[in-house]
Image (cartoon, rainbow, N blue to C red):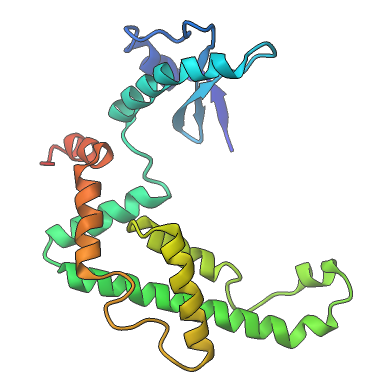
Length: 217
C-alpha cells in the first residue's frame, strides 16, 4: 500500500476547491491523503479532539467527500460500484433484467455449493488437527469464504441483511438435503433487479460516471 500525504494530485484537488474550509469551526482539520492512487478525505483526530468536535466537523467532511466524488469519480477498483455499473451497462446493451437476475442467482448458488463442499472437507479432516496451527496449514480445495461472497453479492443488489441471512441458511440446508439451493428466479427476481438498478442509476455515483464519459444519466 502506497500512502502519500498531500500528494501532487491531492494538492491539485485541494487547490481547485478553496471555497470550502479544511478546518471546522470546532477546530478539526481535514487531510487529503492519496492511498494507492486514490485520494481520500481524512478527519484528523488530535489528542484534545472531543466527540462533539468530530460531530461538528462531519458536515464539512461530507462537503469535501461530495466535491471529491465529482472530481475523481467513484471508486471502481473494487466493491459494489463496478459490479452495479456493469449490470447497468449490460442491461442497456440489450441483456434482459430477467437474464441478469438469473445470472446473479446462479452465482449465488455456486457460492452456496462451495460452502457446503468446504464444510464437508473440513468435517472429514478436522479430527486430525491437534492445534490451530494444523488448521491454518490445511488447504481446502474449496473457498472457505464462499458464503461471504454470496452474502456480498446479494447485498450489492440491495437485499437486506436479515433477509440474506435467512435465505442463505435455507439454501445451505437445501443443498445438504440434496435439493436445489433456491427456487426458480430466486432470491433475485427481475423486479428486485430493476429496483436495485433504478437506485444505482438515480444515485450520484452513476451520474458522475456518466458525466465523465460524456453519456446520459
